[in-house]
Image 1 (cartoon, rainbow, N blue to C red):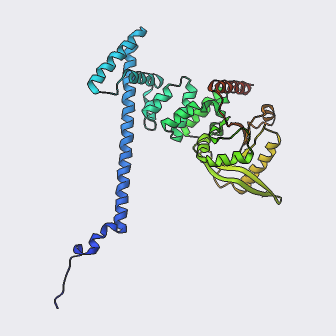
Image 2 (cartoon, rainbow, N blue to C red):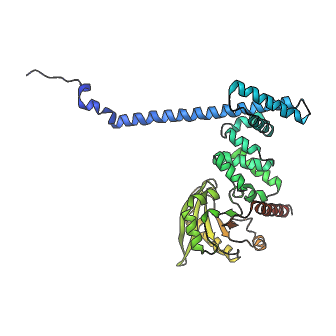
Image 3 (cartoon, rainbow, N blue to C red):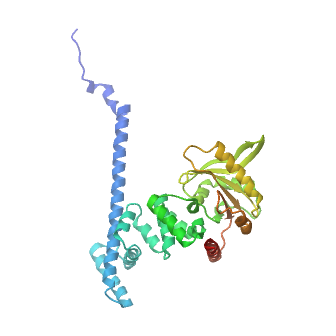
Length: 357
């Protein structure tokens, strides 16, 4: 009987080739290349658009500086917007051109804009340019870069007065500048950048009366929102972390890890006013964590005592602002913005004055 030969590409196995492991891996690798290319194209487009708008603003600024009349700028911008819209269509409104002017005026140096354009979008710069205070703007700029905030998150952070609530804002101006400079040059996160006071927990939906267990349960139910309020580098580790010392059981309400600080963060929840006894309790937790839970390469743990109300003089006498224990208030209902802003302003001024003593 003569030998019958069938080419392999005519067999059923040939039709099944795309389903093989090798074909799947090939498809996966090509998809990665395409996605990487798309991301790179998007980054390049974003950078070029940002630089274009900045250059437009700078060019307009240079033209406007030649005239001292206030009405001249309005006339020039209106005329230019009409001409550009006629030539290039929508997107070149008078409002947009003023944004270009403001961003160029706020960020006048080429090298700074070039660096920022690789990490932040035009909308980021536009939002940041609306902040008149230089240090506050620098704070939001660096955290936007470090934590890769979207423009929506950036605006939410500004609206919630994050800078005013940060421990950093309570430092004397010279120290504040030093920390922001270190963050910018080395990307080094410090506890003063991470912790804030007060924490706004209005998303928990708690009624007028609630227990510590209710507060803890509400936080875990809204854990994603809680971490957003705490900061994006917080990672949840445990609830009611059980530790044993001298055959006696203790429990840490909440345990987190902060990737930027490379530290465990123990959180103790208290309903009422801060009491000096809370310090000893937290110190015990931190010593235990440092001895039994701290990994190689990590820094010493930090404790955060969240209270409904602070006892400022007790906190100062215990020098808790200088160690590894932080005390902050939490708000389950946000007061009117004017009241909140006034309260934070007074706290910042008081803390900065004490820092000069």
